Each structure stands twice: as structure tokens, then as C-alpha cells.
Image (cartoon, rainbow, N blue to C red; front, top):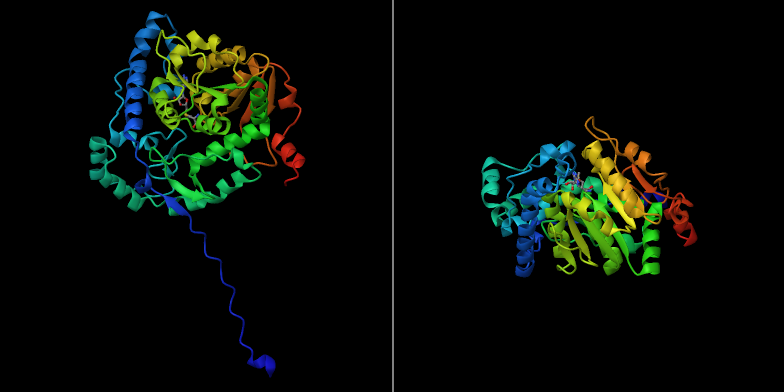
Length: 408
Ligand SMILES: C[S@@+](CC[C@H](N)C(=O)[O-])C[C@H]1O[C@@H](n2cnc3c(N)ncnc32)[C@H](O)[C@@H]1O
């Protein structure tokens, strides 16, 4: 009887799906007048670099095959005639124009393999190309590109990338230049952030972050050189971890250097940031040094020693001649104590097999794999001129570190 009078327990309640706070285009911080003025000046400097690429290279007898955009980039970038925009409507949303890894922040989608319908109509497209990013277009997009909907399927992958990563080495992405996404554990997330965290995790697992820490403890600074930095995500992450002790050199085609120069210089408040002009002297020390690819050859040996050289997702897109040239130059610049970290895979027919070229040039290679931290891509390697014990003695520094510090 007693049992008969008891009410049935209520059915278990499904936990509500997490509600992630979105950071949308409407929340974007505009550049201050000072930041805007800096960006406009830098744009003029990079425009000069772009305009001088051909005449300068000819006057110096540089091989056009080496210094002009090659392979995939020959189709992407015109060698003359580009005019870089410097109106506010463009600069305040610079990141929307920088889909270097194929992910378009404007739509929160890839355009090669789309997950969502494109939120455009012809009128908006025409206005966008005429006027840039106006408040009306921001509103139109913010209403149709919902970060919560578009990014929720990728949150788990991002959280996997935070597994076992010391808080010090979690990528924090500035909410400037139109960067949008979801707020996860207090920081901004979108797939470009996951990609950057994956590279940081690879550097951690490879023992390269530890090597930089020791370089800085020993000499008070470390020097990193990245070829093809895109808009500068990895550069910003590494400089935010190490601060002024890390000098960062970005080498790129002028039309791409524009993005890293504006992004990194603005975020550094312009302090210690230099765009090298043809014929000018190298600064003795710097925070960020921006080098057009056609000037690299001329100054390369004066940049040594380089503690870490980086390349992600770009050697494969260059010509074999360019990759071999970079490999041989980096071999000189890293000397006996530096390393090269690369993440590249030749997955399309036109891609250059950069790993084969690097294997030909460098005597030591370590493939990066981790059981402890997550990396998105499987094609990360470290290259060196000698067996550097602090990097090569351990196969997964992240696991080693986690075991030593007692975490799982
Ligand atoms: C696909 S993007 C990758 C950007 C960034 N590393 C990332 O993974 O997001 C390729 C980069 O390589 C650069 N690049 C192409 N050809 C180059 C060359 N000959 N010298 C230097 N950089 C080059 C591009 O301008 C661009 O910054």
C-alpha cells in the first residue's frame, strides 16, 4: 500500500546544452585614433615595399623565380598594381580580410567546404566592395552569422586542445580587427584560435617552448623567425608568452606582410616594431621586425643566430626552388643551437613536398607527436643541424612535463 501511494519519480532531466556567450561583430572594439593613424602609416610603408619589389629585385639582379610569388601564390597575388586600403571601415575589420588558413571569420565558415548557407545578398556585396564594413553591414552580418550556432560543433575540439596545457600557454586572442567567436573559459575561441593553440601544443610537446625558456634564461632573449606568418597569430601568441625577451622576425610577400605588420604592431602599441625598407639599416634589437621576402636574402646572415625558425602551412604552397632556398638559408641561420619547427603536408597535386627537401638539407629531424596535449595536424617536425639533447632526448615533452609535475 505504502508503495502504491508513492508517486513515480520524475523522468531524468536532460542537461541543457551549454550556452556560450558570443562575441559578435557588434562587440568589436574600434581602433583608437592613434592606432588607426599607426595602421595608415604602416600601410603606406608596406605599399612602398610592394611597389618596389620588381624594380628593386631587378636592380639587384635577384632571381625572379625566387622573389616573386611562386606556385599557388603566383595565382593569388598580382606582382604589380595592388593598392592597399587604409580607410577605417577596412582597418577596423582587418581580420575579416585575412583568411590565411582558409577559415572566413566573416561567415564563420570555410568557403572550400561550407557548413552553412552564405549570408550575403547582391546588394550587400556591392555595398561592401564600395564602402567597406559599414555599421549597416555589421548589423546585417551579426544578425545572420550566429557564433553560437556556427561554432558550437567545434567547441569540443577546442576544449581538447586545452587539455593538460599550462594556463601560461593558452592562446588569448585580442578582440580587435573584427575577431569574433565564442567565449570559452574566458577567452575568445574560433577555429583559427584552435589552429594556433594546436601549434603551441606542438611546440610544447616538441620541447621547443622549453628550449626558448632556457635560451632566455641563459642569454636574456631569444630570436624567432617565421616565414609566411599570415596575419601573425602564432607570433602574437609567442610574444604574449615571452614578452620583450622574444624578438620576432616575420618574412613574407609584401601583400601578406601588410596583415602581420598591422596586426602585430598595433597590438604591441608600435613599440619596437620595424618594417625594413630597402637599403635601411637593421635595428640592433626589436620586438617585431617585418621583412619583405625579396629583402631577406640581403640581410639574412645579419639576423643570425636564430633560436627558432617557423613555418606553418606555407612551404607546400611555394615552389620547390623557393623552399630549398629557405631551407638552406635557415640551415645557416640556426647554426648549432637553433631549430626549425614546421607544420606542412603536401596534400594537393600542386603542393611542394617540403618535407623531402628539408630531409635533404637537415641532418636531424624529430617528428612531433603527443599523448598528453592535442595537436590538430599530424605533420609537425623539428629540424636541426646537430643532435640537441634538450629537444631530441625526449619524444613528448608535454607528457614528460605532466608526469614530472604530477598532473595527468
Ligand atoms: C596559407 S598561408 C599560411 C599562413 C600562416 N602560416 C597560417 O598557417 O595560418 C601561407 C603564407 O605563406 C606566405 N608566402 C607565400 N609565398 C611566400 C614566399 N615566397 N616567401 C615568404 N612567404 C610566402 C603567404 O604570403 C602566407 O602568409
